[in-house]
Amino acid sequence: MPDERPPGAARLALVVDGDTPVGRLVCRRLAAAGTTLAVTGRSARRCALLCRHLHDRYGNRALPYLVLPDAPASLRRVLTEVTGELGGIDAVVDLAYAPGRPHPLGAALRALPADHCRRIVLVAPPGAVTAGPQDEPLPADTNVVTPGPGASARRVAAAVLMLLGPDAAGLHGQRIEVTGCAEPAPGYVRPRGRGPGR
Image (cartoon, rainbow, N blue to C red; front, side, top):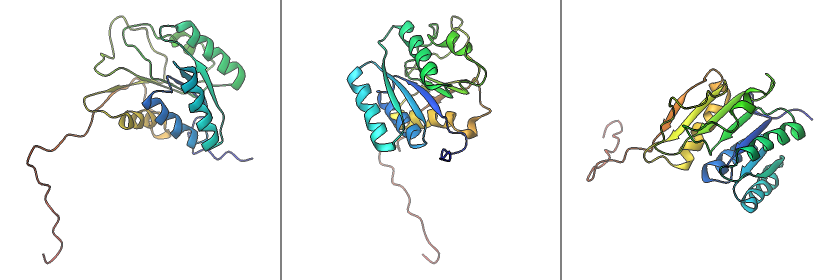
């Protein structure tokens, strides 16, 4: 059967905290592109329901993994299981990134073979300082997204997906803040366009 994924689409992606609003949007878009997904969540039930929905709607493989907060060892175990069972990971999206603390997958991702994990996108909490002297060096090909004022889940997911896409192949070490649209001033009336002869 021919490969029907768009050029540059990941074959296998690990999405950490995929049962969050941003995570669900990212998972749906990746699944629609034909990506096999390994999805971790803090609720076994929500994560399993999401993976079943992705499989039923898009027909691709989506496997749930329970990872509790502040349990870095379990996240590293999931990475080992996923690479052992499914093969090389092309992309990692971590929606539980905590700047200023050692990244639980940092050393494990750096230890993967060169043909594994082409893209890593970390999503920091709103208002987080995304770089500091105590930060552990992140693996190559890592970009960080931070939700700014007014940023919706849809806009944050769009930034993540852009960084995973083929047009972002040369972007590494970028730190992107996503903001919402500026609201017009009170009393502002949008001008209507005038056509010829009016």
